[in-house]
Image (cartoon, rainbow, N blue to C red; front, side):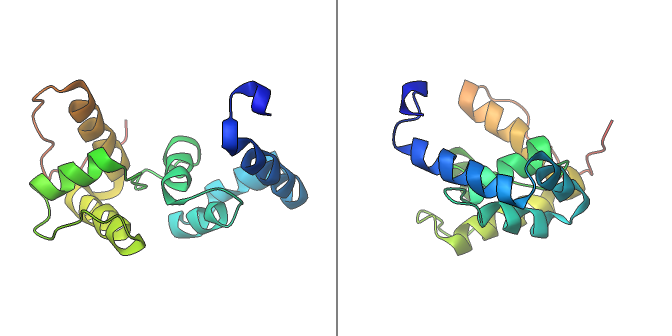
Length: 139
């Protein structure tokens, strides 16, 4: 696994793959689509080496959980600047939840995709218009 360029993550990938096989492999992962977001995320976080951000990425991009909010430093800074009054410089579990909940309240059931818009705008350094509070709709 280290030959694949995974570095220190190699042991986590192997352990997680073994866990997933014992749980049912691809069938288990696909079954998470039928579970509510909080349950699917909790199942993913229970896997070796899977933290909140990775679990939220999997929920948003692979499990059809449109309200999953992967929170990284860029999203934290956007939330501090535009949506929060509290200082969130320390990324605790409570801070992660506060940021995700704030973005979900602001943008509704498609908040994960609004988060992606905000993330992209921040990464490319463009002053894109901020999404409003209007409810986003799935196409």
